[in-house]
Image (cartoon, rainbow, N blue to C red; front, side):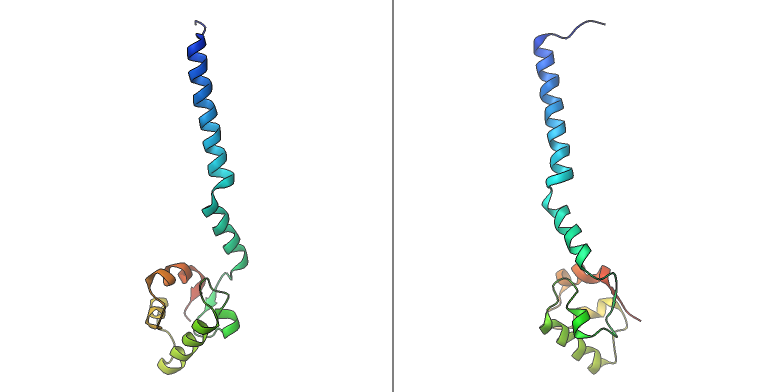
Length: 108
């Protein structure tokens, strides 16, 4: 096997340096990953939207006191939620907000 020329060594070094930098960025600096991990650590594993108090509901991503009260009011007026998707019938909880919280909610 022959030796590499100076130019080939330079190309190999550049490729390896770029690959290592890319791995570092993906593993340690990706803000989306860090944000998701931080949210997951502070959010509940599961909230039963048919029984949760306002204090429990506000732990869901994007749900503040106002939305918590709307959820409770809807639940009282309609005899509870029959499915998680029904939460989208609460005024102000659209598809985007529902997608953020659906993994944290249950209906029992």
